[in-house]
Length: 465
Image (tube, rainbow, N blue to C red):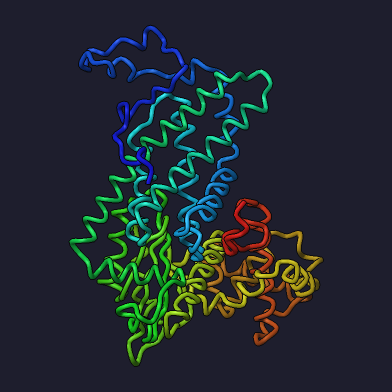
């Protein structure tokens, strides 16, 4: 660990003082509410507003936050062994989110000339999660340093590409990033240490959490204590949490999953909580779904539930299935309404089809071809979906569509020359699948940020770029 990671910040933790940027005279005076100290006079400074070139580079890089964050993660995995060993997609996604927040936080601080306490929260809570996930302190703090170097390189190269920018401007920008790195590392180290102290007061709970993290990462061995926990039939559930949730909120949701849903172990990610739920003898998956359903209130948006697993290797598969069920379920929620639990068992055909988008489009084209004369009417596909998924129960179909039952009867009659919705069986199942694949592909096409393939870009960590 470098000495810089241990030293105290050289200035107030709310204010930067990069070299080479002059202060406004009116900003150099302390306010009445502050003591007359050398630091007090710089609290209201906004250096970026006094330097248009730095503001310009901030504007340019704000549009590239995700790209820079992905470069940071790739650098972590190349230069830090603990990060290079990570294969768990949800943990990589967690790290990527913190990198994005780091870039955003630094750019905002450059724009205003100061760093606010609340902007540090996302970064320090990321450090708390790394402690709970069992990533060692030296690796975590080194990651912040590596990330700062990547960000500095991106800012310098952006400025250097402009022939009107001089060395002084480049040096000033680099100074901002280096000072930001100092402040963030100090805050992250304090948060990490605080979380380690909390873990020491509840060693069994955190041991089980870190054991689950080891299983999800594929780094567990049979010698781990309590690996027999994963030998009994169980499923992995992943809770999607509101973006505003704090680390304490995530922990509260994890404890609720233990007390109310019977979770045997759990851990946290960015905006998700991952837990293993044992299936009691004589019960089924429906028992788990019923116990999870009441937890979807307040900050919990929904759950993804994977297949049944027996053994730690299958736990990883169940986790991936739960993530897929949650992702596809949340993506289709605008069409079908949010559900408390998205079960992989029910969504498996749709997920399998979407794994190969080109083949999925061919399937949709062939299955919906008889409906082509009607496809210009926006009620066609929603009506087919609602009717088939509710087995033709008119009252439920009308309620789902928000129309009168007579309207449903009219629509079914209009569709009858092209497709018979009353036959049921394999044909109805194929038609329902085709409609849902069509809806999902249309949603993904309309929202490029979701990824055109329908799968996470982190499924293969080497695709981070």
